[in-house]
Amino acid sequence: MRARALSSALRASGFEVVEEGSGRYSFDVVAARDDDILMIKFAENLDEESAKRFMDDLKSLSISLEATPLLACEEVPDDILVTYEGVPSVSPRTLERVLKGERLPFVYVSRGGVYVRVRNESIRQLRREKGMSLGELSLRAGVTRRMIYEYETGRADATLEVARRLAQVLGEGVLERMTIAGIREFTARTLGSGERLEGRIRDPILKQVYEKLTRAGFIGLPVKRAPFHIAAKRRAGYPPAKLVLRKNSEPEGEAEEEELTLRVAVLCRSLVLFIRGERSELVSGEATKTVHIDRLDEQLSEILHATRSQAD
Image (cartoon, rainbow, N blue to C red; front, top):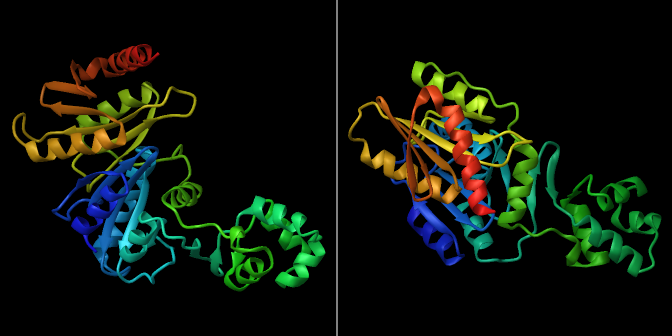
């Protein structure tokens, strides 16, 4: 299932979708529904060189735009999640089943083996309802009392065999289901908050703009394989905001890239900054404001303050 079929499945699940059909960017599909934003890239196999070179950008975009990155790979076995270069990967068939709401256990590959995410509170509650001690459950599950304690406090997941035994003793309710929200949470633990994002910017204008964004409280990264050049979000402690920046090579033209940038920004609820020669524009929703690079940090802070005031 490639971009068109996946887009249909996403729309049927209530997502708004933007497709990128050229294959030259680090995402092929961007989709948004409520708090879930997905950035999806397709690959035939995990050894595909093109897939590997897209991963750093996909991670950077996902952290800066608070999205969940996904690699939809034909080579990944169905009904299991693997992590490739820090990005979660599932088969297109698995993703389709998740979108349809099928009750798949959250099975994933990690260092040391294959694991199933377990619901810590359900294990504790069902164990107590059945009048079982930690020791009794540990004997029936074939693990130590300490391991049962780890499951109940959310510090560990179970191996496939242990998960099967827990489900036999306590019921299927102890197994976490694979959902979009669950994949988002799983990925957030891997990627982190992005406070230590780093990247080298060589273009003098982009470097100047990036310094202004930093003064306005933003962190972000340059991206090579996207229709824009920088994706950023505000640091912890600042009112939340996201921004994508595109610097046009020519003052006029490049309409397709600008349109794609705007469409992605809308789904990600992000500001857009277009650098067009001496004229720059900041797009916030349906409003467009001319800005000056030498005063960008001041103007950006003013615009964000005014936007918050209107929302209040």
